[in-house]
Length: 386
Ligand SMILES: C=CC1=C(C)c2cc3[nH]c(cc4nc(cc5[nH]c(cc1n2)c(C)c5CCC(=O)O)C(CCC(=O)O)=C4C)c(C)c3C=C
Ligand SMILES: [Fe+2]
Ligand SMILES: [Fe+2]
Image 1 (cartoon, protein in one colour):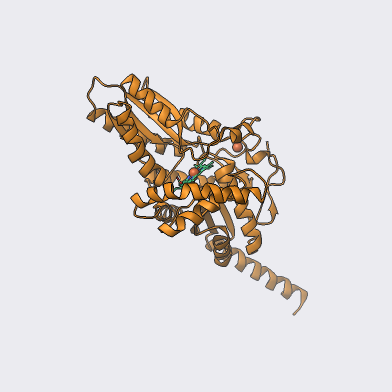
Image 2 (cartoon, rainbow, N blue to C red):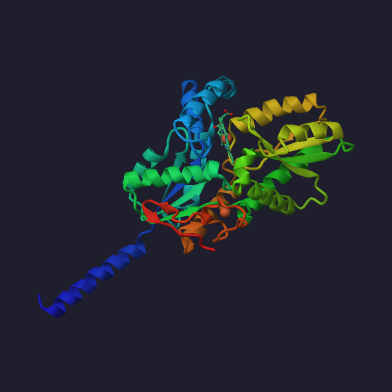
């Protein structure tokens, strides 16, 4: 073959590859992260141990952490098992997250060859098995999407750390974009506000017009010390509530942010949801409780909010108790997730918020944008980008 023929052949092959690439949709793996929950009564104890032994949750060095985790697990297991027994002996979180994954894949499938994986932090499917499955599928790119709109070191941070290690072990090296938070993303806020507004109007219609209605935006709590060290979660929860209230467009809406699910004896951030129920009882106002940091139903909505707090509200003399549903596979919420994936792919950054760069104040030292050398799949990611 002459040099000219070789050059023509190379050009033909390159053209063919480009045409192929043009015809082929990008192969994208999206990984949805959530906390996970037991799949049968016997899983409650190991699930709880996995949670309490996580250094992002119990912040004491080994081997004391393992000892403390075993002790807290021993104390918590009967309470948690009783809650899961109400739900048929298991958490519904995996099925609901799988439904979200299927809906998100459908929303993106016109433009992408997409597969959406579910990765749980403390019960199956967990990081190692999911990272291996993602690698075996052979994506061109990966988007990591936490099902926590607000970043916390205890949730998103912990999941991403576990993923980074698992991806390295699995040899997953595809270019990866990480979406750290979407607390005030316009799509997420609009979808959430529409759901809360509908619940509010429904409750208002059922309620005696003489009785006022207060909205309790109830988020999962955190130990105060974690927030004081720089966890941006509480700041982000407050941003979500402010944006949702504005988008609801109900003038003079009586509302408050409060925190539920305290599970350790330390001081947790407040006010607690129980304190707010007590106050509503004293004020003789009805309440609409809105889960604001959970995007799926699970034990803390279906048991804690729907049974325990409802009973406490009645004891405190709250005249009526309503609850707004979590997003689950609400079409507006899934469309917002799809837009977040598009946005993450279109941006320059390997680590991004819903807006692109960092959104947290400087005081939030545990915002992932503040951590130098943040890495995933063996690649160093964006370092303190703002
Ligand atoms: C110190 C303990 C805990 C912290 C901090 C914490 C933060 C945190 N958790 C969620 C979301 C979920 N938590 C879930 C269950 C769960 N969480 C804890 C403890 C802490 N969470 C426990 C012990 C449990 C198990 C259930 C129980 O014993 O009550 C779940 C899943 C539950 C299910 O039904 O599947 C979710 C989801 C957030 C958002 C958060 C802080 C930002
Ligand atoms: Fe929790
Ligand atoms: Fe941040």
